Image 1: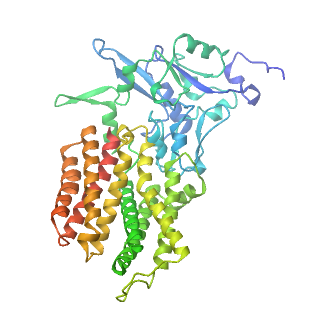
Image 2: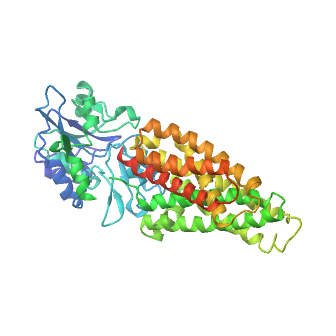
Image 3: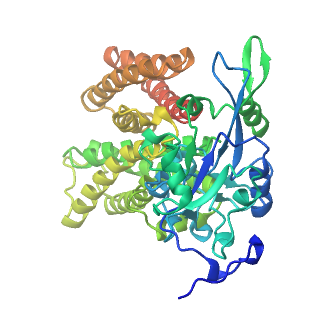
Length: 234
Length: 262
């Protein structure tokens, strides 16, 4: 079947005929390029109407360890679409499944909202939508990618810090770039084989990522963004 | 986000009581003594009530009975919860069968305990197997919470099981006092208390638990009732059993609360 004629204008290349069949849908995150602008998390919330206080994708601000503590690193966090996903194993109703292109998705009709997936995910990428009582997480914008568009976060990133690609396709230029730049998995030692990889990933980030940036201090103890967020939710 | 709340604490506590009471009761039913037979039947009744109450908390946590049915109609062999819900159903049904099948037996000052028929014996063994499963599976549910390091501790499996049996025995002795305490109940209380104490010390010291956890779970909930059981007689059984139940409830709360803040 001949390749459809692609237009230089991205939004004209939309439709099933432009859908590229992936073996392992993935996102490459380049931390050197991320400026922490939150475009990705805002566009994700808009695209999926994510409730207030919940996130399918969020950007963490991390204070670097001494002696560079004046610098911040920005880390977009989302579902890692693990190739050995703990959430899939933990779900009692098999509501979490894998599509042909490797992405991990929640089948809402089968979800009983028992939160086993939330407890199983080492990346904190799943939440229960209070309005529906069902589990929700990033699905790499299935509705967009099946018509040839990139996920909303990738499309909105002003610095191309996020790229949608086929991790199993060695000829894919983004996959080749990930190899060249030694892109690493977040918590790679968990054995979950994430499909989302990070360029410029450093181990110290994993310990601090759940805290967020230090926003205040009380009695000499630092208060982190995430402490504050959790307190508000409670 | 802390996925599990107080309903799950209540469910784990009641499921443990159900498992322990059913195992204790099923052993008493085949002990050959008419008084033990009657006590065993009451213990199975306690197990049924605890399992149903636990089930209600589980449904409350899921928000609707339809969601509970979803778990029953959509299986996932890799999920501990999926196995657990099926074990809960088998447990409850076999306990109800045993309780109904032994109705009217063993009372009225009989000299010998009634013998159970073939079908009843099969149900009794099914109940024992399901009780073991009920006691152990919550630990595997917690182990699947890979986001939380405390739940990956291997001591969790024996501790959850032993504390379940301990709570079951305590509930039965609280609700149905045994006239022959020293011979029938005390050995179980002492053995379970010692094993629970050893595992608790290993787990809590390894995880750096707070003094409050040590006080509530180890001192008040395990050590004091153990000393009372070693030294005492049948009197004071209610106080001893209440302390054991407080300890096991505190343990379940600590596992859920501290587990999710680590």
